[in-house]
Amino acid sequence: MRNKPDDRRDNVDKIQYNIDKTIENVRGTEELIEKTDDKRTKETLTEKNERREEALDGMRKEIRDEAISKENGYK
Image 1 (cartoon, one colour):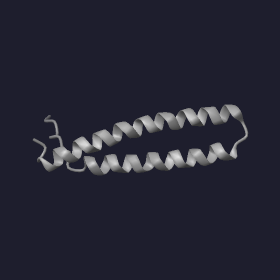
Image 2 (spheres, rainbow, N blue to C red):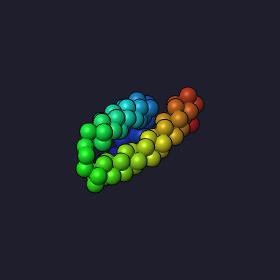
Image 3 (cartoon, one colour):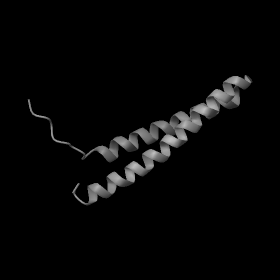
Image 4 (cartoon, rainbow, N blue to C red):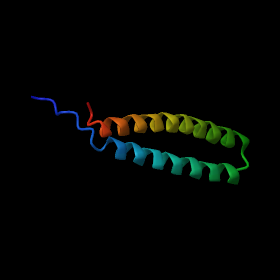
């Protein structure tokens, strides 16, 4: 059985989709933080958003790398 060749043509689109969804989650969580009075819940949600922001940084770097590779024909 042969492995499929690495098809990276849609990686930029996939990463952008993940970025968009993560930003939506951050915003939704920020709304929840504003609405809740529970201190522990606020802390948990704030920590979750901090991890999402770190993930966004990584995805943004990855999308730049992929865009450059795409422009260069994935060489």
